[in-house]
Image 1 (cartoon, rainbow, N blue to C red):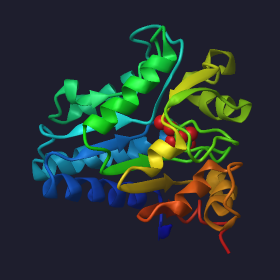
Image 2 (cartoon, rainbow, N blue to C red):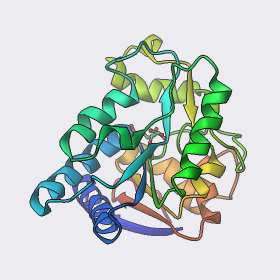
Image 3 (cartoon, protein in one colour):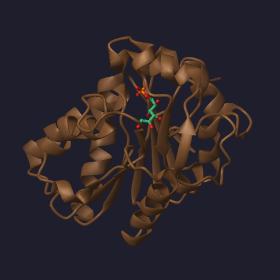
Length: 243
Ligand code: F6R
């Protein structure tokens, strides 16, 4: 895993957005793997800024998000579909039909997971997968002990993840769903490039484990050490506990 440390979250977002913009210019039909969460808010703001300044053309691009909550009502303000529509898709010229997330309202979750894997495969695989890191070490929602070979499936969220994400549910932990559909670690490792983005001191401990600790399914992000082209872009606060 390569590591780039920037001064602050703005610089991290700017560099991450630049990588995506450069890929899109080189390959207008690229397949992007996207993530949600607070870290990515700045990344998408920076990407929209570049898109406007440089007239990026997303019309030929397709996207697959890492994950979606299970059990939220359709159109919920808290769904990752709503997050993506609001923060990115409605602000760039991507056809909404080119944007894919797992369907957390599917009645047959195993069939939905298989359908999602198949859709990624039929798109030719993911060129660049963005991932954040949770305080449990998850990438996507692959909580501790997720096998490195795991595929898209439904998973029970760790209590720490629900606490971390309560901020996006008006601090009401009971409102945070208990389950989600997520790409597996194995799915993520098949992307041709994986870019992990982490900012802020709350991530310093887990980031040190991800970058310097032993490779273990207890910290899913350590699987990225097996990837031939993985890059972590972090700020100085998140880098604080690196040796
Ligand atoms: C989101 C996702 C998660 C987040 C991670 C960090 O789609 O898959 O792995 O990237 O929980 O979240 P934030 O950025 O809110 O700290």
